[in-house]
Image (tube, rainbow, N blue to C red; front, side, top):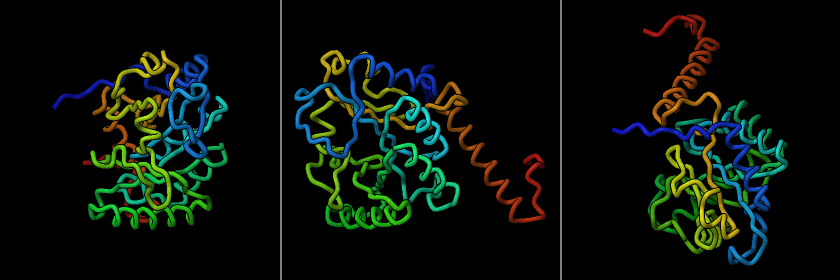
Length: 252
């Protein structure tokens, strides 16, 4: 299997420069909520910042702090059902509360693959997950993104759980869409795109895990480091809960 290289600009400074570059080009950062524009050309150029938190809440907070320093806000979409992190731990709740205090919104990152493949089933499941998330964070959840969406969900022209989602035509087809999925720009560097040259609106999806200063040069290296960090957290928790376990002893 090929180990893909992560662009050298994918770090906290690179993310800061990316947002600043958009601002220097006249882009205004906006939110999904209240954005009623039906065409990318009807209004001044604007940017909707979206973060799908697939792996690390800590990485998300790092990006949230950068955005606060740039006086911009974004939406962080979190998973309720994931083996990568537990949203309901005290440390996770602290991060979510910190993101909201920084002025960011929390959305539901909905994994449709966990449910029956029908709109009715997905609508009911998304409603339940949004209700749980709202109760946990004490704030409205008004927007949904799909986790690794099936092709039929891309461009779905109806709400889910009574809420807008990031793949509705208004956000996905009627404006530019750029993503750093798999640790690289999926459709090329957005700053160099024809969309920016034409000053059209953009939805920019980034995953915080790829933009950390201590990430390795490759996708494999970055994910190996993430696994190591998570293992250290688990070892420390074991030591705190089991006196016979030594977290400092080298693994065999």
